Image: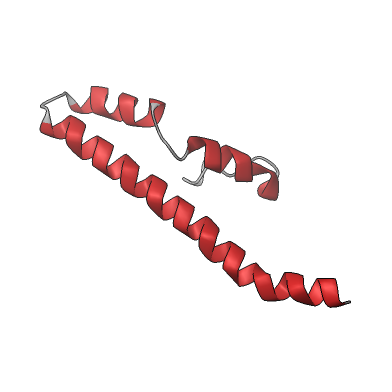
Length: 77
């Protein structure tokens, strides 16, 4: 009983840490995209590189088991 109570007390801490990971990876992705656009690369090349080198991809794939593998962070497969 006490273990279950401790779990529910620590659940918000875990949720905020996961949200922080998403915030950091999204910031890295935005900065990477901005740097590529600043270098004058074409938009289609920038889009491909941003998707290919997305730092949040492993995090989204790791959290995919929560929704049966349908979660990639963008609402699509």
